[in-house]
Length: 123
Image 1 (cartoon, rainbow, N blue to C red):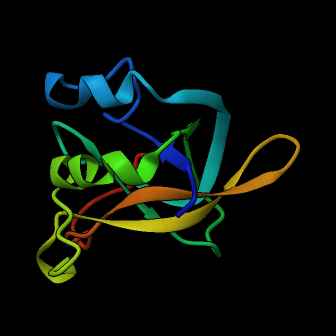
Image 2: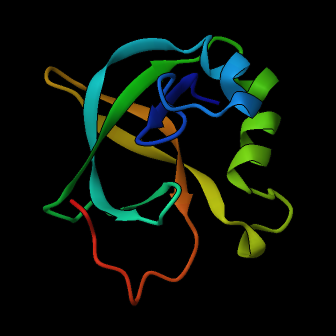
């Protein structure tokens, strides 16, 4: 598993709620970057829907997470991702290409898994 995570909302250290603050505090900021796709405002949080063909960009931060595998279960729980039942998950963990100023990096991302048909992107 890549030890990089792309965060565009509450997984950023300055936005993390108490239940995951201890994990997020250990994230090592690499730099800001973008992922092609759409971003939606879902009220208390945002939801990203990556699309490699999109002209739109989701802005966020790339973090190196040493030992990501040791904390991924807690992150999955927070994001409502059920690996054994992805169809009933609020978010699905996936891999994306994060575009940085000087290079691209593959990273984990939490992708919104709900119906977006009536939503307008905020990006």
